[in-house]
Image 1: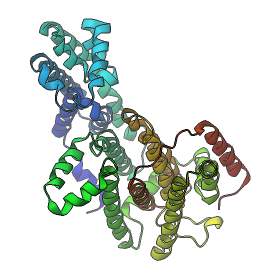
Image 2: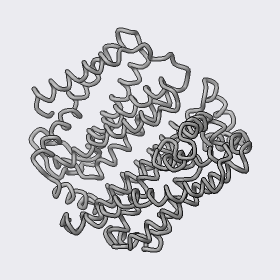
Image 3: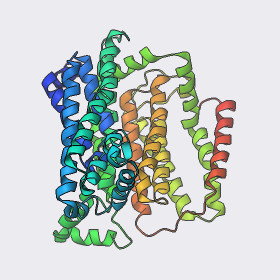
Length: 465
């Protein structure tokens, strides 16, 4: 079945979209669970699909309204009737600071906290629970719950709905572009779920980690390796899962690519999208990223940090970083030569070079991925979420720039990203085999400025290589 037909067949029916909006609104408002679910992204996506299908706006707003009321009502009831049990269970047992944050907000705004809190992201799923614990009168809560939901529902539904109504009627999208946009939107939603919820579950405080730990200890064959890995601290479950998932995905994706002598259908869809978006400004930006991500660019970015590791005698860190870059460069060279996939366009400086996998993408993933992992190890656990999101935001433009300048297919980027993740996982697993000294103190501001100066000189003075 062609991809466009497949996407059309997978498009939710109007009734299912209404149910999805209700479920997302309910879950996003539930006590604590809303902190782990990217509700804004999900509800905007569902509303956009509804707008594209010309689904009645009243149905969507009504579903969001009901879901928000039910979610906050359940949270209030839990706090009102099960105060002690809630505080002793996951995730409040591991994150008492969430409850403290909500209690301070409630003390500051009193009965208005439920109304105001619905529109304040960090405390939205906490306030109804705290209101119940503080024995807020149920009638007062119901009034605040209903009136705030009446304002919240259209505020969250309308942007996505109007986007869905607009993109075809006013943007005059060529045929096939809708499918490409849906694919990219789905990728963004999946990444949002992984980074906001899945990442936490693989740490020592996550349910996935504890469930696997309990299961492994009951299996004699796996108990000894698990205990051996835990001698120096937590078992690096996140790195292990990353390796298994990335390696398996890379193998399957590569088989899919080499089984097709022509570009994949998704490659043609995405190429059509970027041709439609093409402009002089975008093309110049793509060429800037081409310079940043090539060999000279990576050397310019990493040279100050490598010099600092050398001077401060951080030999192990320097060896791991050098090994990661050498490995991804070797794997890219071998992969390109082995698969021999032609590029969409081949400029003079890339003459004789092949397309799969994307070296720019894999190297960027290794650079920002390892940086995020090393930085996250030095900061409090509650703030690590932002480190990985920043890493994703930095790697994404580098990868997409290869589509802007037209030298890669979309499937090349996917293969490059998965290859980079495999190298990151292997490097981190080796690094985490034993306890390592902290990287502090580190003159990160000075080193960052030095990298910025060198990469600016590289972009301005030298052509792509």
